Image 1 (cartoon, rainbow, N blue to C red):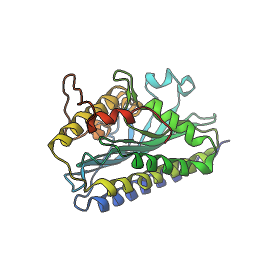
Image 2 (image 1 turned 180 degrees about the vertical axis):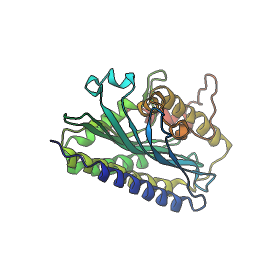
Image 3 (image 1 turned 90 degrees about the vertical axis):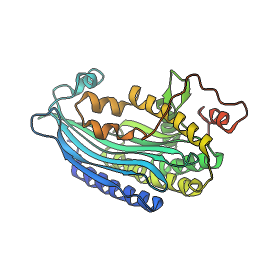
Length: 304
């Protein structure tokens, strides 16, 4: 019988949320996270609860959200069991930490990360479980050295788990965060993994922990390097325009967003990832040779 320590996973995730919030508050120096603790009322499709934390109007971050959730259900939505028929008739639990950071300064990239655990159980049968997660970076005015640092940090944390883990999970990230209707990637990628259980529970859990803790190791040095960079209205308007790509991906393609909405999850927490301000412009074309035009050179997967 597989030994799965759900409580250890939950304790780590709640601690991770605390730690990330502390680090981001220190970097910002002004705003603090406000917590909205929530529970599901009896009779709803999902049980459980969580802690949604949001900071706004900071020195560094226009808005940031770091959520912890632990939801339970008696059965999965049809959209899930259609792809995983072995989950039919099982109760399930899903827990995780998910975050999105939208900075003030256009020279500081937007970033997203999440780590999660899922388990479906049925009396008398082995549990079906897996880990997932990753982190990715969405720059507006990218610097090659920042991109290299981001990916080197990801590569280093993957190294203890196998020679091919970084390359496989980087490629998965590049493929996942792609907008087919725009024919471009959302950003410069990072790591993405899902359905991870083949290493056994302890090793998979250790990797999820490394990815969760690795996010701030990769992101905060970039924020510190760029947060005082001078910018004007031109850069701000380009930032707002490019945020539109972020919204398009999250609402059309993101599996976590779709699962949360389809399974009756908490809408405010699910849509926490949306930027506070964004704009679209019909048939926008950057001026050839401009810094805005150079972004496209970074939105094709490459070896950093």
